[in-house]
Image 1: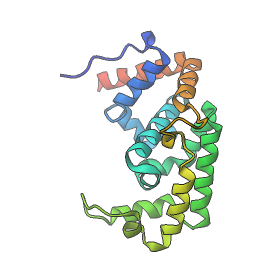
Image 2: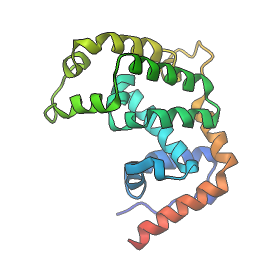
Image 3: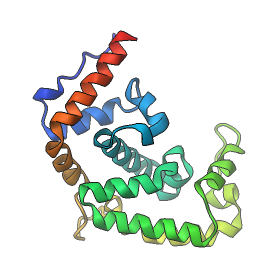
Image 4: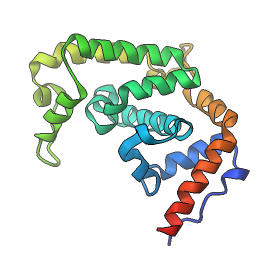
Length: 189
């Protein structure tokens, strides 16, 4: 039995964000994720930030970078800037610079991962070669500045999801109309 459609008009910004997060892996939102650059910014920003948070929480920053969401690193930086998470955007820009200084692209990381057998467990060094170990160490070190790793809350970290909720609230009508159109298209399929 499928879940009833969400009534986005009655939801708070936090509830809208939570609903997107819970539906992001199923149609129609999962279909939109195939080409996020064609998705209007008002929906692209929450999707990018939810994808980033999920990937880094589950697999760490290196997992994010080598997974399909890592393709959108520059877009994720832009999304962080769009909501006002300037510290997080700066950290991600530094990570992007570290990768560039070591000649590492998302395509290379994905290519290395694609060569693994399904279900194969491997370390970053075994998957990508020892020559990327220094880059991986630098990226890991820089990623410690991310809000995700502030587990003790003893730093003045950014409240990325608070900023995202404010972003959603400011664009509520546009986002709700887009989500309703997406769901209506799904119902007519």
